[in-house]
Amino acid sequence: MRKLTTMMTAAAALMAASSSIQAQEVEVLHWWTSGGEAAALNVLKEDLESQGIGWQDMPVAGGGGTQAMTVLRARVTSGNPPTAVQMLGFDILDWANEGALADLNILAGMEGWDDVVPEALQKFAKHDGKWVSAPVNVHSTNWVWANKAVLDELGIAVPTTWDEFVAALDKVKAAGKTPIAHGGQAWQDATVFDAIALSTGGPDFYKKAFIDLDPDTLGSDTMKEAFDRMAVIRDNVDDNFSGRDWNLATAMVINGDAAFQMMGDWAKGEFLNAGKTPDEDFLCFRFPGTQDQVTFNADQFAMFAQGPEVGKEQAALATAILSPGFQTAFNVVKGSVPARTDVSDEAFDACGKKGMADLKAAASSGNLYGSMAHGHANPASVKNAIYDVVTAHFNGEYDSATAVDELVTAVEINK
Ligand code: GAL
Image 1 (cartoon, rainbow, N blue to C red):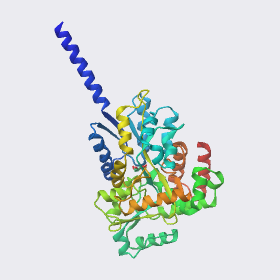
Image 2 (image 1 turned 120 degrees about the horizontal axis):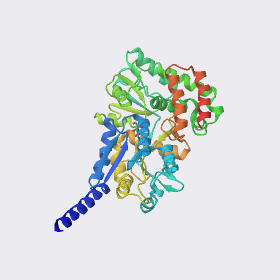
Image 3 (image 1 turned 90 degrees about the vertical axis):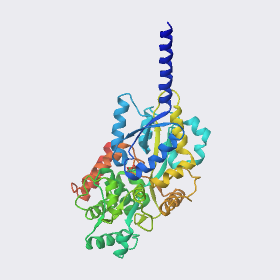
Image 4 (image 1 turned 30 degrees about the vertical axis):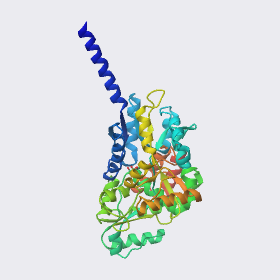
């Protein structure tokens, strides 16, 4: 009898211990696997670990998160969702619509998220008036990254118009270098297209085409011109661009093998991780012709509902993410800017300061738009349909006129 009691006590203790281990651990699905991204993620891991909360890592390689979202769907379908998931824009709203996300409202109310998170982000962090995810940052996609030494050597000033940009590309090519470092993956092609479309047609055109999905704008001559410009970009990438990961393209600029990369400001994380300094080793500037505009995307962590109430460890993760100290520590490493409006830019480098100022200015002048390429303009079905057309055109399957027709049809079918 005594033996049985001892065994029962031991079993109870074990159960209590294991449930407290579970309660003290978050499993996080994310796609931050490049050097710069991993360095930023470490800031979050260490923050939680210092609070005694363990981190079970679930990385899914693949920039932009396409593969991560496929893995997530499989996990949820098999009844085993991760605790927390890195997510973008409309994907958050899609999962919230399915009733899969935990309600963070009480926490958000206690911590005053409504007052400090910008409206543009709340649109994706709230569903039916309830907070369902914790915004980590704001990235923007209409940036160009350049190797300063290469530009100096060739006497190239920062281009401010499309024509100046083309002239700069010609100079680099004539000098025997690769003008544009690019990775031929659908989301990267679309990232370039974000900036090209915005520059070609202006902010109103971008909004009508990618946010309103207006068929006339999608099928316009201006859209054809945007595809023609994509063909110019295609002529300025190296022969091995196909399938290349974005961070390897960034490395080409870091090493001086290429002059420019058109990429979101997560690219800055790679430069910093390689020990490079803005304005000394590399330059960051808005894609020519989009100087006053910002196409943004914000990484958020959505918590998958595990019961009627949000888990203790999920709440701790959300609190850590929204804390002003973390917002600075993380974003200076990641290349993004804070998801709170009350964080000072003091700790940020020149590109970060510019990113913060641009975001603020674009938001107040009405020139801030969700990025089509990064899930902030449309749900995944429409985004993927646009990806397919942009990529087929980039790889020479369609000429520009055909691409325009295909774009109109693809959007019409999938919206
Ligand atoms: C974006 C994401 C960034 C960065 C990038 C490349 O969608 O918002 O944080 O991870 O993909 O992986």
